[in-house]
Length: 614
Image 1 (tube, rainbow, N blue to C red):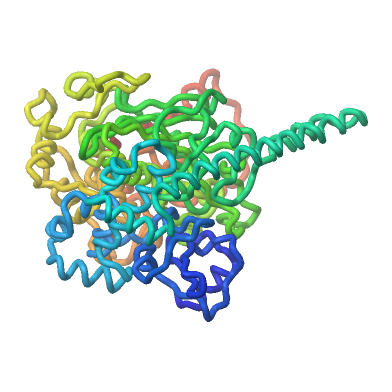
Image 2: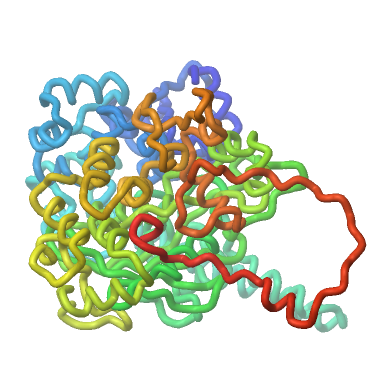
């Protein structure tokens, strides 16, 4: 993409490019996301940057209107398996904050100088600047959502000193920490005031309509619509009245902790809005997580369409509990117009998931946010996925039926690996949790334990494949870190007794977040090329059908699973699903009594033996 194309995206406020690049205005000294609602600046005054850190290094501060530091991450880092892609995943997971640039370089297997050179060449900023931008965003979220003293907050966000914290916040946000906190409080009261005024005006209009004998329903409808908007402080209907000073992490600043789906009081915890781009098939991803929820570690509350997913988290400095609400109403999934693979209205899609985090140590905030984002696949690019998969005759109607279908990741890669090799229904993993998991200090609803770490299972009474996996994870023979080498991890997993290539491919897809596993998950040993993904070749040396899905094979798998063309949890085999051919009409034949009941097939199992599902 050249600068002229980028400027066209800015002029049209195309939200599809949020997080892909940033633009700065030299006359104002600010940088924005492409979809910023402000007046489009003149082309001569615009500069483009590949990252927020690069814009900050260029002397520009973040726009207070569009919050460019809070956009969804680029899907490119999920796809790429080279040095830069792996480094970005490690930085997002907090490695630089915990281990410094030297620790990042050791994990990548390169010198610190080489890592600095590669990141600067592609992103315009080195690992320190990228981590600094991440710390600044974490600090802003804490300022706006907690009453933590500023001195404690600075260290919780990862800053080494109060002076460094103050200087960074002034440079990036053009204000002191106290000013940012005060502005957030004023903005929250103003948003609530606007929502209340809208509700009062709507009630007045409804009363006037009722006097004329016309529908009071129109007045109540107006009341529901009041408070909607597109800015960072916009509320949504009556819910805006109940929200206070909210925020979003990893994407989109909000107005505050959303009230529970039942309209009750706002749940406790740091309120976040985790943004995504494009359409989002929320019902499918919540279905996927619900049927696999392990008692004690996970639970799903509420009816379909208004569920809350909850789980415990094992983190670097402590533990936590995450709650994520299923989006409803205007932010729910939209059916595309006839003939379209994916909704194409620019900026019309996208939104956020309401999330709350309760942490024993606030230093884990950024890491916890990134893990929840990976679990819900919030950095995906549904437009690129739909364009690629929609070209396949088999997948075209499936993509149109479920726009924005995601490929769920894992909040804890090692936990996902153990559950996959353990196999069986979730009750089997729940028994393991009850026996070996670490109990929480206080149970929270159905959440009672942390999933046992691999080191805690090396001497446990478990199947030999599970014990071998835990030994390999504990001693570092298998690495499932955020930026781990996916190819090396898959080969190491496949070599373990009782794991096999299909279980290894499933772990690679979910634990390591590889979007290109579907084309590489065949049982006949795909040839490797490109950046770590597989291309399947048939017996004649020609490319198989799955090669056309690259690099989005994992999304193709989920479409096949949801459509029932592939048993849920089963990876691809040599027998590829094919587009059904129409059959000639036949005269109906009488059936023997009871034949219909005997021919009905049961639903494919969600969990199967090791190597087929979790």
